[in-house]
Image (cartoon, rainbow, N blue to C red; front, side, top):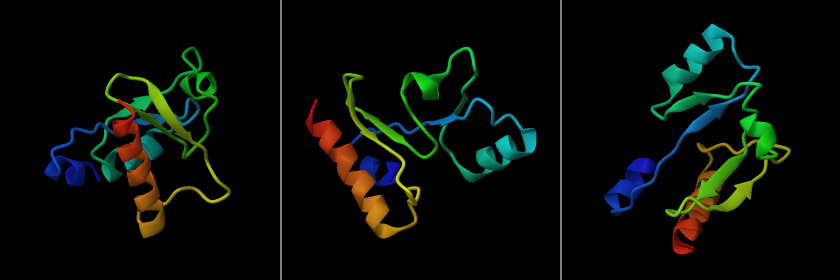
Length: 101
């Protein structure tokens, strides 16, 4: 999706915030191996997930001014970006966030 946005002349940043108790080195390395996105490790003292009232597989969309424009909460089934409908839904949310700038 980042590449698609780039081809459209849009600059979009994607990052992952790993759960604070997800500290198993093998699991972390598997995540690193699956993505090109920066991965930040949440820690109990920062509690990023808790501070954002977040959960696994939530998405936070910020506009270019750094304002949170949308929090897509985890559904019963997590968003699967390899599924066309989930991919299209997330992409449209990001485009809407850009429009709110």
